[in-house]
Amino acid sequence: MSEWPTVAAGPDVIQAFRANAVDVATNAGIPPIQAHATGLDAKIVAVQLKTTPTYKLATAPGSAITELSDLRGKKIAFAAGQAQGVVVLRTLQELGLEKKDVQLIELNSPQFLTALQSRQVDVAPLGEPTLTKYLNQYGKDGARAVVTPAVDALTILWAPARVLADPAKAAAVKAFIPYWARAQVWAWENKDKWIDAYYVKDQQVSAADGRRIVESSPKPSFPTSWDAAIKWEQETIDVVSKWGYFGKSFNATDVFDRRFEGVAAAAVPADYRIAQS
Image (cartoon, rainbow, N blue to C red):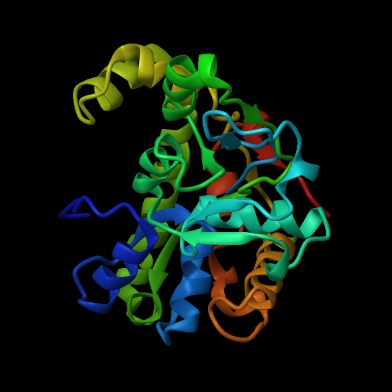
């Protein structure tokens, strides 16, 4: 890899793919669904599977919301093309709620905190370190965190189909996958070094905030089979399409390139592999 552009959010990565500015990126599971809806052919080439939630639903100061069943009729911060949006929709799906039962306030995720503070929304999905900071400031005013079982299950590497159709570039992507997977393992096993090198020196956040982020993240796990990942992606496709986002439902296998299945898992120690039949 000759260049490392800083493009993080899914919608921005999609634009970078379209502009031929980026050949491979890491994101959550929702951006490939959005890309498909916009006509961009791009494929998942590596999967890290999470089974524990990393977001909680933070309530506005003074809110009477104490549990998930209180969400009916409430204003909920929502970002359609981001992981937080998936958490919201999957939570509402599990509660049996429909679009008419809540008010989804469409915002970019960096706007969630301000929307909560100003009571523009009743609830917003927050992760660390924002969640702890918010509760430290507004907990005395009644703000709280409501646990949701909804999991943003996938961290992926993906690439445009044009890249994967080029034998040389496809080989380069395949060669990069083990480095990506082993990097997640290294960060897990060397938390202090990772916090200092990445969060403090690169991202310019405090060591305390970096630790909150790391401690809220699950141990990296790489599946030998993508069946569970494809099932989760299909469920997500069906949910977002049911709620009126990103067009009609489609077959989740369309956004996976199974030539690369197992490459990441084979590159890490057995403790970091999920063996699936």
